[in-house]
Image 1: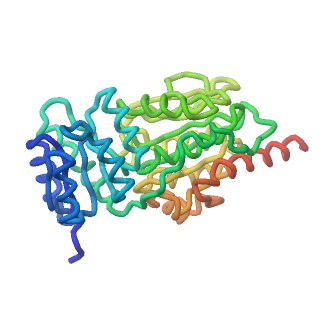
Image 2 (image 1 turned 180 degrees about the vertical axis):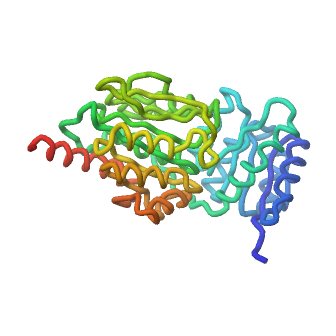
Image 3 (image 1 turned 60 degrees about the vertical axis):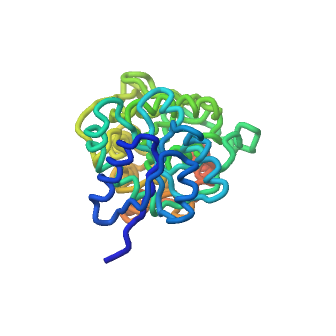
Length: 355
């Protein structure tokens, strides 16, 4: 029998620590090897038991989770899954935690703590498994592109061209690295990132402050415009539609696809139908296979399709599945992805202009 994935749970609530241990220890491949009520106690525990993964609360006494995470990732980097309350403050903290190097986060229910957490059991254990095999990447500067890095300009951009992006575990920082170098006149970008309700607005607002393009949480029925990136709201599928000559956003709460809503396959399928060869599809880091089949349908419809390479992924699952299906026409490291997208659009624009 293979070695179990070992976990330390850090939370100031004794009830949360108890329920987290119950959830994790119920899985045959997972084991809680220690719990701590605050980061100062956890510090010595981590040295003693050397766990594979930490679960870490945001708000705790003596030292809050974000301060501890920042110190941890600087001095002893290891996979961390944050536990955050579903509040505006909690969502901002979750975004900051991902920026600091946390692999993922789990929402903590406001009411009925025990029963609420038990409903999240599958999500909690899946995210711990993903974290255990995650690559911890060095954090790239959040202000890089905005500080004046050279950009590959893409002439002849039109309202017909479109970029569709899908990501999951590790995706919030990967999406930032993709969007930051894009020029203000780039084609519209539609993004499906696996994220629960209540967090995508903070995610979009943070990106909007870092990018040259405008970034917003998508709204049902709005026109899709160049120079904008639209983030699928948590809990909603996002699809591309047409209204006359214009692209529009369609949101729905149909059943989850590949266990996700928003689903990347839903977005990519709609882009294949509505944009065809005018689109570029990009699949980034994430666990599972959501988006792989949709990216293949985009390629079959004439779109240019790209996947993130293994070395730059936090979790290579989704890009691996897409590459195995033959869905990706090209594979690039994350740091080259924006330039690869713009290079294709520039070449495509020049080719069309000569026809």
